[in-house]
Length: 45
Image 1 (cartoon, rainbow, N blue to C red):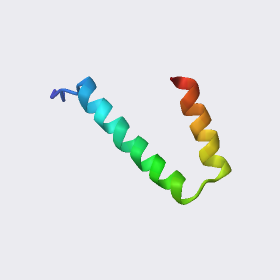
Image 2: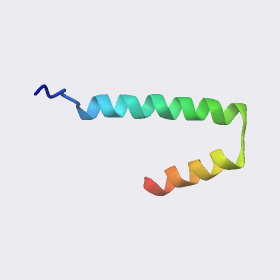
Image 3: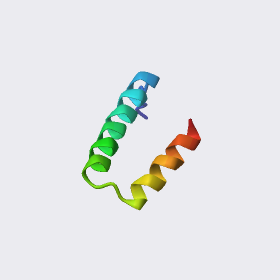
């Protein structure tokens, strides 16, 4: 079996990518759904 080394740095970089993507799409269309998602994300922190 092959195990891929997945580091915190890689996960963090991926999260930042997704965050940037989310921020971009939110800027284009500020909808109720994205506001709900932002609130959910804020609760996690």
